[in-house]
Length: 139
Image 1: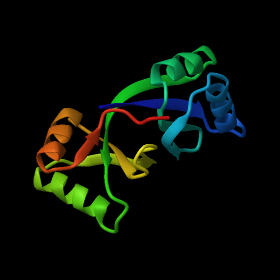
Image 2 (image 1 turned 135 degrees about the vertical axis):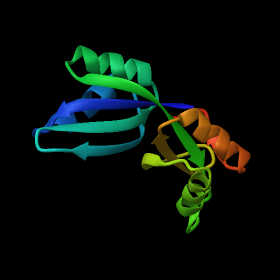
Image 3 (image 1 turned 180 degrees about the horizontal axis):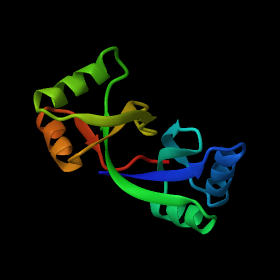
Image 4 (image 1 turned 180 degrees about the vertical axis):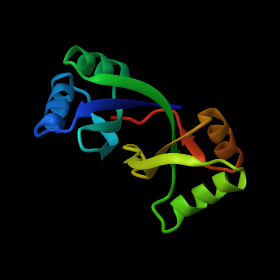
């Protein structure tokens, strides 16, 4: 299981730069991320090298943060891998909320990071179908 850092931030010029500056200051590496925005606020979801430390530092700077369990699945860099993974979940009646990409710094393989309602069931499903679930992403 991986910990995802979700940062709720005002959608204004320089916000993402401020967030990345805080992470840099704390020597925290962003290993994978996705940003969603709306007119006034956005959510930056990221897997980072030190999620608890990142949440603490960002909270001290006034950002609202939350840590969430997500699943990381290592796959070969081949056409159709995401489709195969989603098909496996669909066959088990599991819906995915969102997905984004990182990579394993040791193997160089992509890691699909995603969230669903019952993340523990998702992890068990994928392991039973032969997928490689990662417990940590090395910085």
